[in-house]
Structure formats: C-alpha cells, structure tokens
Amino acid sequence: MKRLRIRGRVQGVGYRYWAVGQARALGLRGWVRNRRDGSVEVVATGAANALDMFIAACRRGPRAARVVSVDIEDANEMVGEGFGEADTL
Image (cartoon, rainbow, N blue to C red):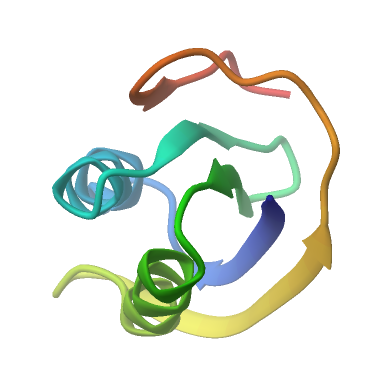
C-alpha cells in the first residue's frame, strides 16, 4: 500500500477524476482527495506491477495538469473495496 502526495497544478484540472479512472482500470483499491495546501493525496493498494504503473501515470497526470513532484511512502490504513474520492483535508 502506498501514499502519494502529488504537487503542482493538480487541483481544478480533473486530476482526482482522472486518478480514479486510472486506478480502477488497474484494479487498485483506495482513495484520492484534494488537500488544502493545493496538493492531491492518494492511498492505493493492489498488485505491485499495477501500483508501479499507477505511480508512473500519476507522475504525468491528465493533460491539463502540471505535476511538479510525487512523494511516495508506505501506508498502512483501511481502504474499502474499489477506488473512490475522499473528503478534502
């Protein structure tokens, strides 16, 4: 399970919606949310190769986004079935 903090122009450009679609297509479970500091936070779990592909995609983001950095750390928290959006923090 990984936690990603994506920084750059990632809010107001459809990043969360895009990330949900990418994660679901790869069979991942977890969530994505905006943070008040302008970043996007993602917690994702699933097969290692699917996580690697998701992280690589998050480094690019959707067309309108400009990703400056992606910080990655191990996470250990409960996630439901599927992948969705969580409340802003």
